[in-house]
Length: 278
Image (cartoon, rainbow, N blue to C red; front, side):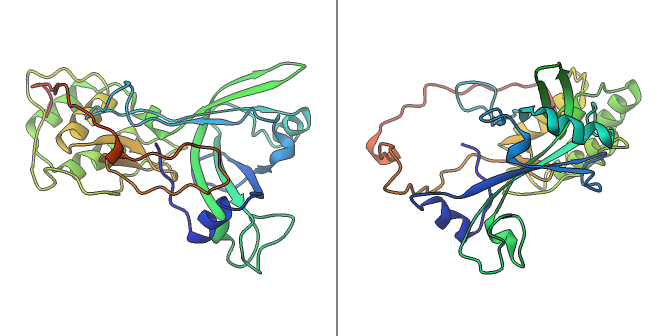
């Protein structure tokens, strides 16, 4: 389960019998740049917006994954016109997604939940993505987006490979280096520490017998050393997360069966690792 940081007011609103919620899409030419177009629920075909996020690419827990998150949605014809009017419907443009709940906040606008003096109480950031593919026909416009992790699928040059073999850095230091090497005009990559990691003070270099073709593969090795998995934050920053148990409460009106780890017995069947890498 991918968790999002939200306010207590947001959590309380999710337990209401009727959850009044909106989402918005903010289009810009670069990540974190000036918003060119703002779209809402009426601009997206119903039930077409889907965000897929994974901590591992397998059906079991793995250490050292570096999965990308995917955003897909279908635009209405009016929305297509809004975007084309400012040349915002093109590959490489950035889309920031936010969910907004109506919460107990007197400053919040009844019509636009994203407005108000303390509107952040009702905000849930869902991620920043760049447009990867557009299928625009007379009948519909399907848009496929990915997060910053895809920018690390950049080939490692011979000089960069030699640098990683001859220099030592901490895990944080290497992650910052990878961001520096993979940044581009529309996405200045950065690294942020969001959770405790293993071997945080250890300085390492790439072993000479390792085959690293892309920076994403290098990130996977580093994430393995950190005892977690690499991912991208909702703001588009590279980070390393570790697996943990979180307390989750579900409103009584939600039709889900209650369960807990204590009522289930699990057996660890084995561990798999590699000797290559950093």
